[in-house]
Length: 178
Image (cartoon, rainbow, N blue to C red; front, side, top):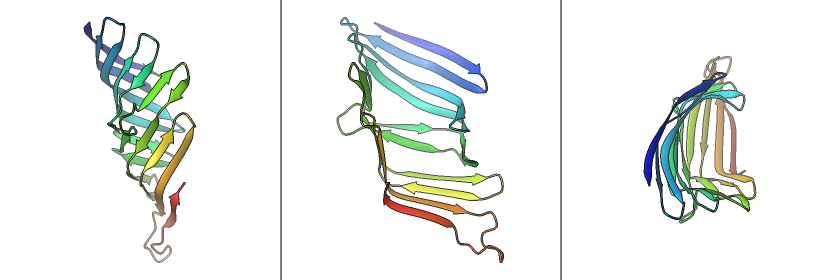
C-alpha cells in the first residue's frame, strides 16, 4: 500500500500549518511509514515563527506505537521573533542518540533523546541591540523531561555599544553546563 496526501495551508488566528506532500506506505501487518515536511508560521512562546520547515519521517505501528526516525534532521525558519529579538533564518540540527529513534510514543508514554550537536544564533532588537547565542551539545531527555546545554555563551550588545557613552562591553553569560 502506498499513497500521497497533500494538506493545503490551514490558517487561523495568524497561524498557518501545511503538509504539502505526505508520502505513506503500509504493509500487510498494518504498519504505516510516513515522510514529509511540515510548514509552520504563527505565534510561539510570546513571539512568532515564520516560514518554519520541519522534516517529518517516521512510522506508526498497528499496535499504536508512533516513532520518529533517528539520525539528524534540520529544522529551519525564515524568521523567529522571541523576547524582543528578531532572528533571521535560524536553523538547528535535531539528532537522536546513535541507533535510536528521535522520539517514540507508546503505552509507556513519550521517550527519546533529542540532541542538538551545536547551536549558533544571532538576532537584533527593534532598538538595534544585538544578541549572540552559541552552545555546544544540548540534550533534551523526553522521558525525564530534563534539558542540558553544554558550553553556553550568550552576549547582549547594546545599540550604542562602542560610543563614548557606552563602551563596547557586552553583557556576557557563559557556563560549561546548564
